Length: 102
Image 1 (tube, rainbow, N blue to C red):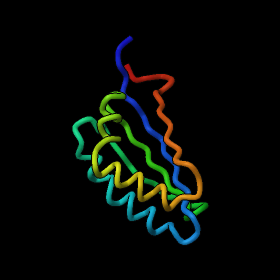
Image 2 (cartoon, helix red, strand yellow):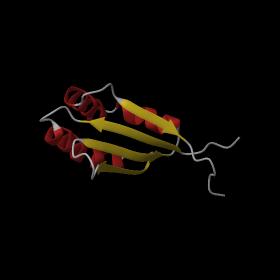
Image 3 (cartoon, rainbow, N blue to C red):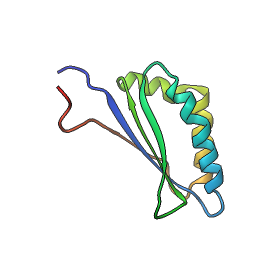
């Protein structure tokens, strides 16, 4: 089976008064992550229904590229900052498309 790229969905719900900290952490990490060789694309989003709710949607060349990303200093700093500012355990889902492009 050929290797497929990896899609990441991450959810961050800020503690009361911490939405600005979550947004700042996202604004810091996204451009740095986007510049990584294995990153195929990354975007941060904010819910229009709940201003304390944020998401990351990213695509990586493969699992190894994402695992390298997870160990980089800017990612480690981001995880520490955002974990302190959210009201739930960190949620990161790894996925692949049901119908990959041919």
